[in-house]
Length: 272
Figure 1: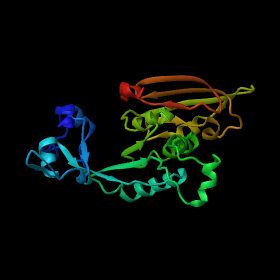
Figure 2 (figure 1 turned 90 degrees about the vertical axis):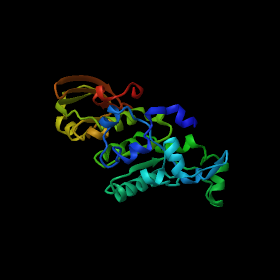
Figure 3 (figure 1 turned 180 degrees about the vertical axis):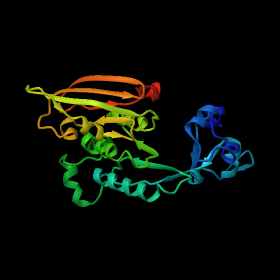
């Protein structure tokens, strides 16, 4: 009742699910048009209880409270690992296996699971060489050369739902994932870089064009590695356009600089 009263008419109802809300075909535009933006999924084990002499099984909960059986709507995998490279490869395998099975949401979990392991891990834990703290584990994953680069380089994969914790560690990545859905085409007209040590500017237009993902977004995680430079500090000049909107950027970058160029009109206020 609390869920139902909190989200009210914005929830996908059983009638919606049985009629127009087909996960294989429904669009964000349709959801916006119908002012529906909440889909509540429950595991069946939560149901099967009695209240005031009435049994609430999954069908009853769906019909009366608009909460749906998660197995009918979503395919999900808990990767159960504290190894950052393993969670990346496991998610890639999961997506490769199920992305062709349309009709359900695909939830890609990038959440580390603390685990004690075996006796061999005791010395590392005692002397501070290993940690079970979630933030400590997350920092191994939420490095720009790990998670950000992994998802950026696989932007053309059929990602659906990307589950992240500690999103404050990767604000540009969150905006990047949302921006992948923009319908506006990004065109790179000219791009140059110049070392902070001086010298002539170098044309990197082709390299930057090759980094545009889904024809709509540019995400530079590491200027030196992404553009194949022999210096890590300098000036980046960019001329581009989103269809009829011209864009000019001049950026002083160093080894820690990240740069995201996306369709700002596509972003909601909460994404900034």
